[in-house]
Amino acid sequence: MGGLKTRTVGRLAGRGPITAVSAVAIGAALLTWQLLSQSYDPQLLPSPAMVVSAAWELIADGLLKDDISISLQRVYKGWFLGSVIAIPIGLLAGMSKYARAAIDPFIHFFRFIPALALTSLFILWFGIGELSKVNLIAYAVAFVVLVSVAAGASAINPDKILGARTLGANKIDLFFKVILPGTFPAIYTGMRLGLANAFLVLVAAEAIAAQSGIGFLIWNARTFFRTDYMFVGIIAFGIIGFVSDRLWRLLGRTVLSRFLANQGDY
Amino acid sequence: MTTTTRPSDGVGPGGSVSFKDISFRYGSASAGTPPIIADLALEIAAGEFFVIVGPSGCGKSTLLRMVAGFLEPTTGVVSAADGGGFSGPGPDRAMVFQSVDGPLLEWLTVRQNVAFGLKLQAKRSGSRFDRSVVDHWLGVVGLSAAAGKFPPELSGGMKQRVQIARILAVKPDVVLMDEPFAALDAQTRRLLLGQVSELWRSEGRTFVYVTHDIREAVLLGERIGVMSAGPNSNFREIHTVDLPFPRDEFSLAFGEVAQVIEEQIVEEVMKTWGD
Image 1 (cartoon, rainbow over the protein chains, first blue to last red):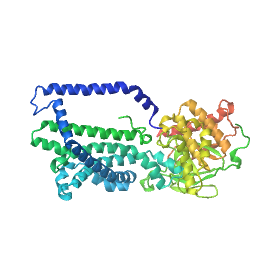
Image 2: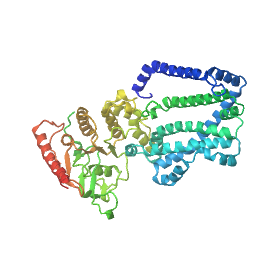
Image 3: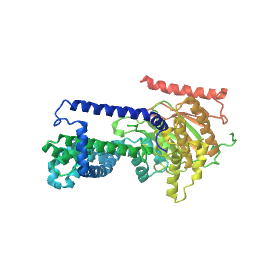
Image 4: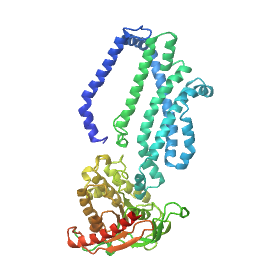
């Protein structure tokens, strides 16, 4: 069970050299960084070694762990909330032209209002606590997911629906056995894009009103001119974002693989 | 397999189809566009294999979609011969589509695709879903070994066999086929045509089959309806093909029938070029 045979074969055969290329590229980037840092003030560009020791300080006193954990909670809560709201609305907009006519103007109006423009308003409405941050992230996630899901639901091959009806499917069967599973690829891709959006907004949310989180770590480091801490925060973002995306991809390749057969391998 | 009696002798489980005073147009009459189909009448007997041929755009598929319940005629009635109405789509008039990649559910295995309609039927009637029916149909279309595969892993010919299996599994009174093999290579098409003809003779259901391919039409059809070019299209002539099954496409008689139909279709196609 699982993806296409050709894909499995390709993955098995190509894994070794591909990993090696990635490792060499990372090594080359670190080396370039090291060389560059030798000709600049460490206040502007700390060397990899300095960043590692800064990271070690932050790990040792537990600060980094706390910041990562609080940031991840905000990202995942907002991502989940935004997706849970967006998926049903997207399905509705994709299935019914009337629902779409009602929803479309709002989607295409709010979609262009950056989440950052709403930061102050959300603090006013939801306070400076977690709620405003989670809601802001949810907002940023919801529109990508919504547009993706609506497009996916409306693009289901009409023969799939007619084929199910000719076999006796009623409206409820159609929704649960054809339209919803047929929209899984769009939900999956939309949520993957939404996850990147969530990280984007997180920094802004944590910069403005927070006493914790990776975003706060970065902004706070500026106050004390700890460029090395800034680098730790930036790299931490990259790593947790990367890991989150890989976990999502793993889910796609295992549990959801039968729904994503035509999704390519990226 | 050769059987002497034909399903259309009225002994099988096939259903009849009756078109009465059918016209069809897209949009409203006030738009001034002439209907695609006008004043069409046709009776298809229970157990008959009826083939519809005609130039592109004459409304062949439209007729089939009316029987399937996907479209309503603008005027007139499509029903069983005794007047029993067809209400909406349903497994009593199930359709095999031309599209190879569209109709199958690619997140279900071949076995689950064939079981799809059966499970819906079992749920409606409150009866138990019978797995052996799926096994039977997988065997008939030669897909037992591929039962665990997903549609994207199958060839075009295999996908169409899955479509045929999942349709016949729900025991339709009328089997509708809309150019089911048009997208396949010649060799696969030849094999599947033979199989469809055999299935019709062994299952005894009514088949209504739309095609562009005259050889296909004469291989399969007891009667072949040649439609005139649209708009205002109708049956130009309905040929009764009195050749035994399985038919020999290299025989003289086969060629004669094919030639008459070919000439009529060419005439109809030429009319549309005149405009």
